[in-house]
Image 1 (cartoon, rainbow, N blue to C red):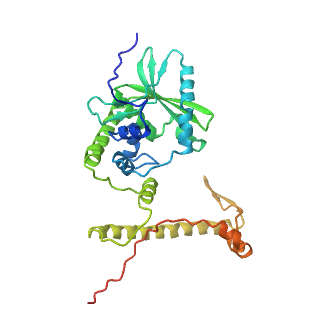
Image 2 (tube, rainbow, N blue to C red; image 1 turned 180 degrees about the horizontal axis):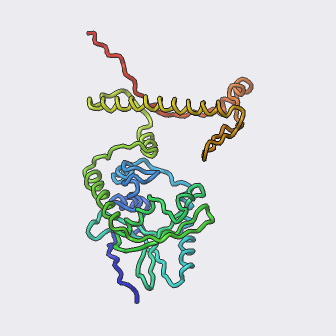
Image 3 (cartoon, helix red, strand yellow; image 1 turned 120 degrees about the horizontal axis):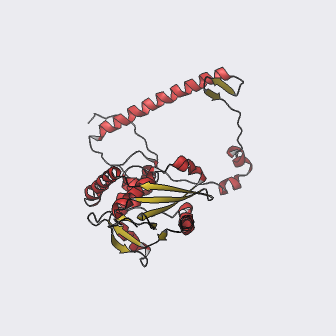
Length: 326
């Protein structure tokens, strides 16, 4: 006999006939599974500021990557593979955005629903990964940024279990079973709820962080600068901390270089040295490149034709001399 189905999500909106703009507007109405990793600081590609700006409709427009395009194209094939492994199960697709019945800002756009005769409903999430990221899926591991997404969907729907069906490197199919983690879900709901109510609804931008994703976003938001501005006086302490850390980093880099030079002197004309369980290498390498100086002198027209001009903003902090004169 089938177990009781605990599915409790409401249909927030049907997406089958929505335009892309309408679909984006629906996503701005709450926190979805693809937002959770960014809010928790687990995403390599997005930050809380990304999510905040997207919810306000102010995020810079991004082109869909080739990897994302192929992930979408391969999704039905991967779902078919999962279904063929379990012919007694039903794998269904419903083009809707669900919401939690009480916390209606908690949204879920599921890839597929699973119906097992013995276990009832579950969730199927379909992923693709490059060979370069295979290590993140090795030994039964699931990347944290995907794991919290499925836990979020279990919260939204009230269900207890689900699967990842993942195609790695275009030819390695893997399955990963996931069970509901109520303690983790409580933390996710707390973080997401605070983010939605304290930042998005209050239109208060969350703080920046040191991630590469945040750096990329700021460069896209503010590609050019003009004039000058006066910063708040309390930022002086942060500037002093920054300069102190830069000084420490320089000292560490010099210490590391000193150790490297020490071992280079020990290796001498040897490429490899053994020290206990460690292998020290100073290997022979070669690199082929273009001699820009010679190219410019011999073929100036071709050099000019191949010149690439890149616009960027250079960040620095320097202490200026204070003029105490009248």
